[in-house]
Image 1 (cartoon, rainbow, N blue to C red):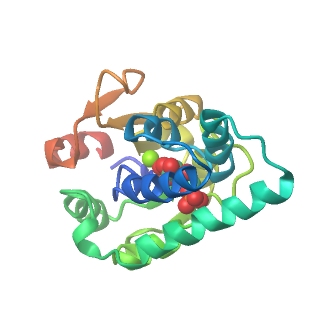
Image 2 (tube, protein in one colour; image 1 turned 135 degrees about the vertical axis):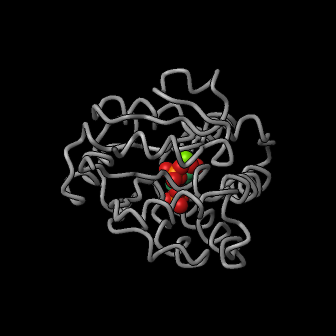
Amino acid sequence: MKHTGFIFDLDGVVVDTAKYHYLAWKKLANQLGFEFTIDQNELFKGVSRKRCLEILLDIGGVIATQKQFDTWMIEKNEDYLRYIEAMDSSEILPDVPKVLNYLKSNKIPIALGSASKNARPILEKVNLLSYFDVIVDGNHVTKAKPNPEVFLMAAEQLGINPENCIVFEDAVAGIQAANAAKMISIGIGDAKILSEAKYNFLDFTHIELSFLETLIS
Ligand code: B16
Ligand code: MG
């Protein structure tokens, strides 16, 4: 068996927190007097909180002082935290546990590589924290995806060479980050959008254990 490691993005791969991010950003946009659509929310996937607010203010044509910017970042996160407070394991995306259990039973190291600063509490809420040997999230990185920093840090902490790491990602920038890290990228979602990935699956229900076996053997 090869010495391989698996790295999971969080939002859009393990759980669908995008809908909660959307509701919290929409509330802020409405409070500032403009609309924020579900299509515009696509631009926010895999993007840091700070960058999301910059994009949101651009959409609304709002110029903010540094103090307002910092206040709105806090307000949005407080709203988002209220949504994730109610999360439980029913929100794990289909067949994610199937893949995690397979990797665990084969003693394959598992990491999380996410832009979110709330990754750890979310994993706790949905009862998946114990699966992850390593967590690298928005609290640890300085460079956002498509920079490979988050995944390279995860590989280093797993003690696995980047070229032997497999990354599950739902965002274009995340696939680009995995490719830049010379890792095997697997796009979860629309294959047309994630065309730069080495492999594509609509979701984990389409991933056969035999496919995982070929990656690790
Ligand atoms: P937070 P991922 C990303 O998670 C989300 O896709 C993105 O929409 C969000 O802005 C970012 O986390 C930061 O999240 O505000 O919780 O720090 O896809 O990288 O797991
Ligand atoms: Mg994501």
